[in-house]
Length: 295
Image (cartoon, rainbow, N blue to C red):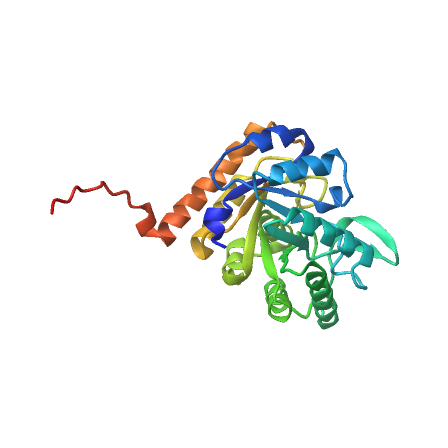
């Protein structure tokens, strides 16, 4: 698949935007949803998703497979998600490098873990089981960090790269997560992006964040409740200039604005993709005037 011509910039799909999303005609537009909201046999929400899928590509971005947990993914969850994948035929499927289930208790968050050798083996097995269940490759998203955790055997980039090597999975590069983590735990965001294995990146996420000023050093919070920050836009331009065009999503999960506002942000991402594409394929951007030939 030509990732630029088939999927340009997309937006997260919310129920109150179904009608506008269905009518939208922008080139390369696609939509992403959390599959947990659609893993049912029928009903109006699934019917709306199928209607939009008839006109636009979709992506499924999971939040509860708990791939970094101390056990295999829940078999019933995998089965229901696989059925949705078969029904919707999404262009992309992704999950987080995090855990949310512990001793049969579900915690509604995406929680961190030490990147140990044992964690690497366990998560690789979980990804392999997931891909076998879906019959397709998935993308794994880099996490957001709020504090330094001890006990790592691997750097984050090396850990992700090794998961790609062992399982054949791809990466979902969340640029907002990189910016937030760099601020919160103290590393250089550009250096992180330089180290990302470009060939493995299947999708990019952009989102807004908030500031928790109630700490000694203010924390950035991955809240998805605001417009994309200018610093994140700068990092996005930097990364697409380095790795080339990738399907790019504007995420917004709270303080949801009007659909046109989301499309304006989406247009900004699309313009950066257009610019990167022109550099990658300069001959495609040349407009020529037809010349009449006389024989």
